[in-house]
Length: 407
Ligand SMILES: *Cc1c(COP(=O)(O)O)cnc(C)c1O
Image 1 (cartoon, protein in one colour):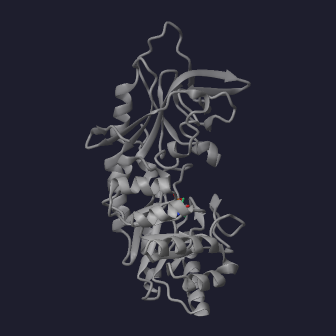
Image 2 (image 1 turned 60 degrees about the vertical axis):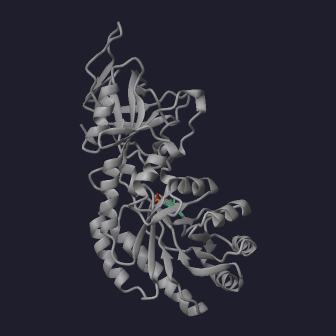
Image 3 (image 1 turned 90 degrees about the vertical axis):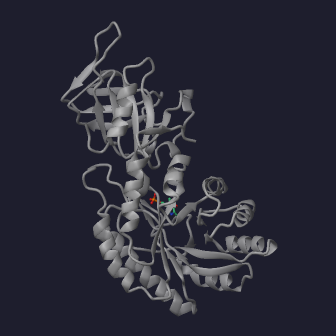
């Protein structure tokens, strides 16, 4: 069994295998999640705070587990504001997202959102107007889209043209506008530039770039930042799962770096999604058939990219292990592949429905169950659930060995 899948989830799947319905589920180990996030938060140096970027996985049991452990939730829509408030009426909530409607802004102010991350001058006007209309002054960070250069990571939000934030070249007018509007208070800057970065040194170098940039804006435009939000983007290694981002090494370097930050930067916010929740989730899918077409061994599962679009979206072969299921009831030979690379596909009528390709397996048979690890972030959340109208996977949340019925 792969060390990447927790024993409780492997047992849960083993208990269901060999039944009347093929196994197809997401299993989440909430105790493992809590343990991981406690360790991540405990290693943060003074002034640094960890928010949870809810878009990675906003299932209620995940949010309930994380709420007491993190500084708050980062949300990117009115729907996420509502989900956050359904968990906790008081928890700090910071509101980002590339474009926000006037109704979302008004509702967020009513719900006591802590800070807005502002993406344009028009959005500054919208927030100021909504805030003055309801008797608020909204704390805001200006999200700046830096020119770079940045360490290479798969999804870059800045350093190349993207729709996010305010162009670095236009930050001066945005600062002046933020200072002049009555309904907003400029609390600092927001810089989320990349996703799935696996190198702690590259991440530290990026934060050093942020330090120089913000100090430069403070000097040039005569402002003082209190809060610097350095975004998320700490990665998960889906290719070599034994070589994960070294958080202890990173936070040691971070402590030195933050020591050199100006004293008036009282709060350095991280807002991570993937790094917090990926490891707690496993997608389990039973093998329905195996065939050899044009030189390739295909393993076909109950499920696919409509449940778990992450590997198709990132164009990687997702890591999995095989849970051997001894029983075989059909009155027919049991197809199997041994010691040959396989391509794992789902039940959709498209050749893009691929979860893993050219993957080495010892042996896999129809009726066995594949366990895809690191499926807790951007798995179910980003998938096209109803394409072809197959049933949805079960969502099982386990803590203290007990299941949580979930949403
Ligand atoms: C998606 C997102 C995050 C979280 O990113 P991860 O790569 O999951 O850590 C943080 N901040 C912003 C603005 C985002 O869009």
